[in-house]
Image 1 (cartoon, helix red, strand yellow):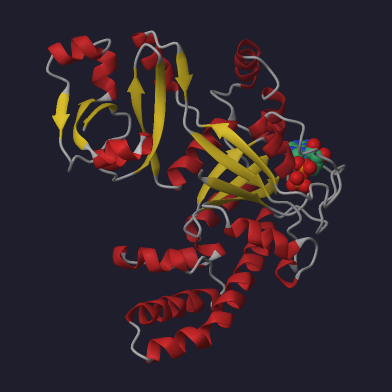
Image 2 (tube, protein in one colour):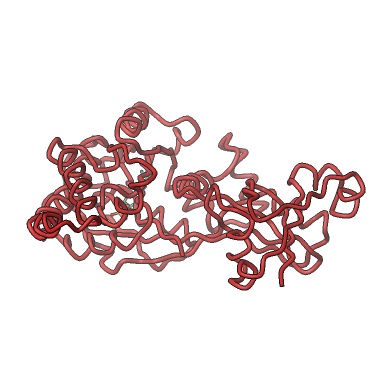
Length: 363
Ligand code: GDP
């Protein structure tokens, strides 16, 4: 499953956010550093209102959304790459993930201790990013001599690896995360194989006070600017509001949100941003039994999309019947969309679009 690591200094609101995400009290939020020791893992549904619309039209009995996994990584502090705090073990847990969400404290509350005794989300981000960069530097420098030796013997793969290591080192030594390097399409695979913490796609999450939940505040504006410079994405949430929302039923949620002038829980945006960050999109299968979202990479072809359901679908792929989401809705279902000529037969080369309603024919 696709995993997103939640990182940040102590007391920025990671556990609060994680609890809201998973609606459990398992990761107890508390007002002191190092509260959460075990990396906590939670599976969440990707909010997708289109799926509800499709299910309604088709009278589907069950709705099955896509899922994404969040891992709450606690204990990162200044010096983590040197094993300070609970450092090193946590860095290993990040290496296991597909993307990183950096939580920055953008709320002011004198009752809540800040490990560095100040509210400064940019330095908070820098402290964490620096630890990740140091860890990357160390791992690359460790490998360098060996890769260089093998590259010299004429090993083509190692020559590519060496070149990419040098690209990464140049960025890291300049104090920049590896994700700021421009990597060609052909090099993507080798780049990913370096397994750098700072080349993972990054999302900067500004945790703001309740009053700033809709538009953010001056601090979250700074974070957004910084995200652009670091080739990261940014999102504003109020972990506190979201943790309160998480325990309400749908009707109560709607009322609460309206009272605050919010359109939807911040978490929905966060989850969707994380999904987009990973280069993912959804297609749907719809029937009387279930309406289901399937996760694919942007650019996947019809056989690859079929393979997500079952490898046999990919191997024996003949063709796909496709209705665009808008057409499915406009014509109120498959039958009328077909009559209107909106059901297309697509072959192996078809690149699936976000929201396609698919039906696969296979051997
Ligand atoms: P973590 O160490 O990053 O996991 O931080 P926690 O989630 O445990 O939060 C630390 C403390 O800050 C807890 O007492 C939370 O209730 C509080 N907190 C989290 N988010 C907010 C917020 O948006 N506003 C305020 N005032 N307090 C918050």
